[in-house]
Length: 369
Image 1: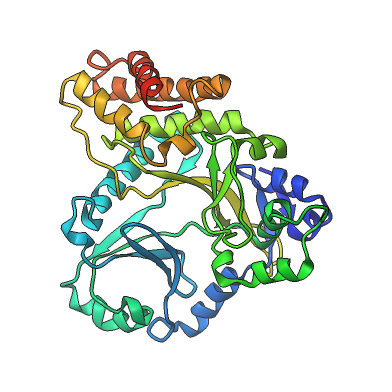
Image 2: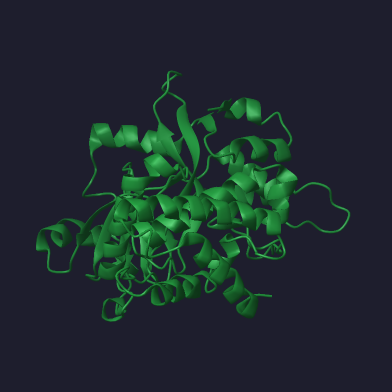
């Protein structure tokens, strides 16, 4: 585990900052607004006065942080409860995925974390709504189902600053970003909620100055390779994660996402500095569907490979023909991990991991270009 002081990182080039600090397991020692808020909460405990702050939004609803707490609330959008992909269904799948990782990842070693789902709060739970409804922003003060889950902390400021300097588009002939523009982007509260999506399946993309955002920041394969990030290790880890989702949790993985974020860990340095460890996380199971492994192999295979070629999955899964070496890493991680799980469940005579991945490649040929 590499420990990096933010003040020392600042002396490096942006490429070196990102190469070192985005590596899974690296630890940045940094002053942290989250740590300050957490310390203030321990003294003042303003749990019924502080308005919750929105830190993300998706198809199902919005994500809110609570003052100084290491958990977040996912609040369902009005009307979403009547859809098959409602929040209660996602909560069940999220629980299954978290349990599967808890059961198998010690042996498999995916080095990927799934935020822990703590509880689901329904609209009929009056005590919660009496205490908390007015703490949501005005446009969200309607009772809808809520899931409490572990928070993925954003990437530290030193990383956010380097992402902007490295990737914000500049006019022709301009080597560096205007300091005023840099400060404006950094000071935008939404850009403090910085998580990075590592797109191993998408070689390149464009950034637009008008819509540039650090929330769910897309980091494309060619850029990761230029930065010197360990994309082969990441591909193998993602293969392991898909195997755990499929064969451990019985979830089809549709539109699940991977992000680079951070977590606070204990350290021996001054209490003014927080130790923030970079990690790779798996989240967002709102579009996932449960798959019964008691069904015939061809039915199960179709459910899994069908989900793998749709939605955002192909942004994360290495392309089978454009980047064959990277896909081989994904394939190997998937096969090895799936076999471990199937043997544990006594299903290794019913399903064959190499056959499944071969079928996926053939299927992908018809759907991917």
